[in-house]
Length: 286
Image 1 (cartoon, rainbow, N blue to C red):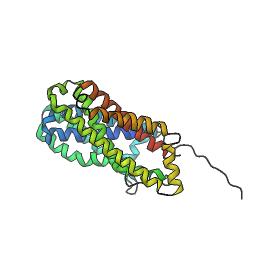
Image 2 (cartoon, one colour):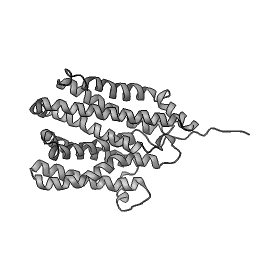
Image 3 (tube, helix red, strand yellow):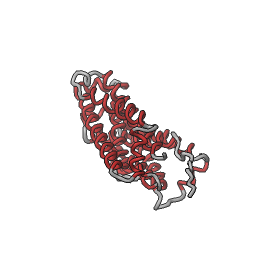
Image 4 (cartoon, rainbow, N blue to C red):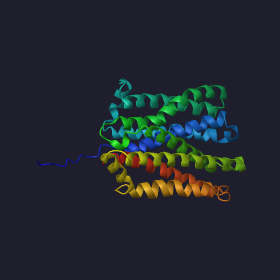
């Protein structure tokens, strides 16, 4: 019997992992803005910069998604239809409501209306949680992509959102001079960031183990990013640059107190989180 290999064009281009990254970053920043303003008040100085940056990154991500649709002026149709069985439909509505709450929270925080801001902030937290995790659900819902069919994927994206949000809050604190105000307390954020990175590495390692104990297709999917065409992005960019080097900095008592090293660690972490999104989306299509 004659067999044929059918090669399909990759459906999701670079815009999709970038949209995932920007959306997750926005959700992480919103969570940070609420947490630092009401729960961890010793870091309250970072709440306002995080709140202002959050809707900016979300708008950029949604703009990329609109362009990727091919007919950006027809985007409004997604807002007048709702498909309960579609993760994309849920995501569109969740992110749209989240964006409105996000802008309102940033505005109220900027104006100093803390009581109203607290109400909006608490209302926005479930949408931030769902917005960060839904991209993993969206991928898991797609058929024929074994790398995406994992219950860990939404949680991996959620942890990645928290990591990127905290890293960006650290950078914002340094850029605005608020890190100097916090003094010794600021280095504590680096320790939290380090433990979140370790949690993410544990989830990635667990996912690899699951793939290698699965079908031949699952093993092939793992080899695509472990030894195949995306191995450089995975090992060098995501793991080494995006996780190992930041951990070496953040667990070093001398380096973590220096803002230059904290900035370096935060930038590398953001690069690593983007690489993770990119590898998952692109390698999953091979």
